[in-house]
Image 1 (cartoon, helix red, strand yellow):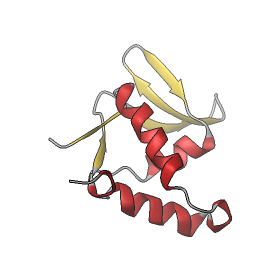
Image 2 (cartoon, one colour):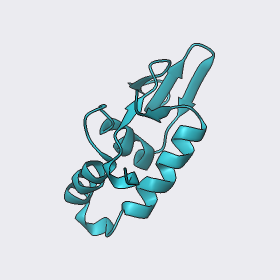
Image 3 (tube, helix red, strand yellow):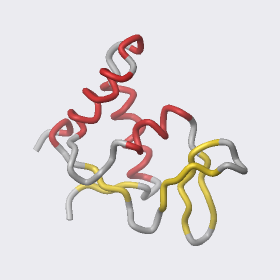
Image 4 (cartoon, helix red, strand yellow):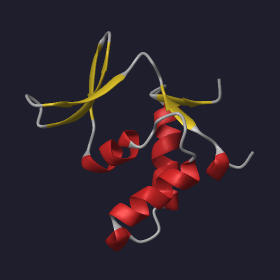
Length: 91
């Protein structure tokens, strides 16, 4: 399975939401909160456990056509998100 066809899911230990007090999207977890920048938020919004990395990149490209090819940027973020256990692939 190639990276592009892999399907990321949000770790159930985290809750993604907009936090008015912080003025940004965050990932909440039992020990605290991670503030996300706008780019990370846009990617996380699309992680639904059904969409592949390729589909996520295509959706972002349609939403932000001025950004050019986002494949490497999305892949880099997803690597970090897996390392931090925000997301996972597979069962």
